[in-house]
Length: 333
Image: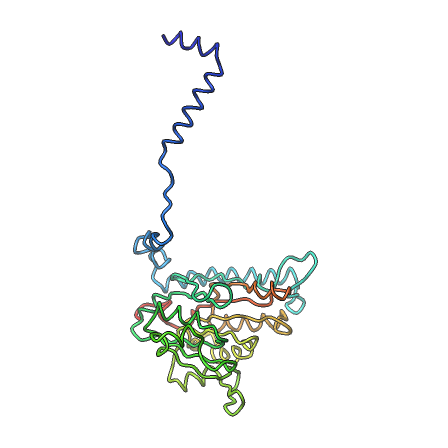
C-alpha cells in the first residue's frame, strides 16, 4: 500500500505540495491565539517580579545600589570628557548647538545615566506640565509627611494634584509671582486644597523682600516654613534656575561637607541666549553634580521647538541626590 501511494505521489508532485500546505495551515489555525487583555485588566509591572526585585535593585541594599550606580556614572563622566575633547578640545571651544555636519547638541553631553532605585512615574498633564518622579510610593509611605516645593505654577497644577493623589501624606508649598493661586486642579479639589500652600513670591539668588514681587532664596523660604529637608524640589522659572541653583548648591560643594537638603530635583532647563554657552553651562551642571545631584530622567521640550521652529533650548531633567541620606537611597524613613 505504501509503495502504491509513493508511486502515486511521484506521478503527481502537485498533490504533495497541496498536502503539505493543508497540514501547515491546519497546524497554524489550531494553535491557541494570542491573549489580548484590556489595558485596565493588566497587573502592575511589579506584580510579575519576585519581591526581592521589586525595587529594581536585584535584591541589593539601597546603599549598595547607589554605590554601584556611582561607579557606572563615573564612566559616563569620562565619556563626557572625551566628547568635549573631540569637539573642543577645550570647553570654551565647544558649540552647544552646532550646525552643518556636526551631529550633537548640548544635551548629548548631559545624559540621565543614573538609575533611580525605585519605580519612576510621570505625573501631571501629558505634553507640557508633567514631571518624572522617582519613588512616589516610597515617599507616600514615609514615617514623617513628605515636603514638596514647587516654583513656577502658571495656572497648571496637574503635577501637584497627581502627586498628592498618590501621596496624600505630603504637603506642597508653591510660589509664582505671575499668578495669584494654584491652578483649578488644586483650588477646585476640596481634598487636595488643604494640603497646598501658595505665595506670589519670586525665587532668586538673594532675598529682596521689599521688591515687587518679593524675592526669596530657597534657604530663606525653608527657614520661614520651618523645614530642614525638601523631598521634591520642582523648579520651572524661565531661565532663573541658573543663578538660583548656583547660589543654593554653593555651600554644599565640599566633598567632605553636608549634602543638599533635598531628595530629588525636577527642573525645566532653559538653555537659551547666554545660558546655552557651553563652558558656562558645563560649570553650572558640574556644580550640581558636585553637590550630589545625579540625573535619572530627561524629556526634551519638543512643543517649544515645534511652536517656535527653533533649536531645542528647553529640556526637563530629574535628579536624585546621592550625597545626603533620605528615603530614596536609605531605609528607615
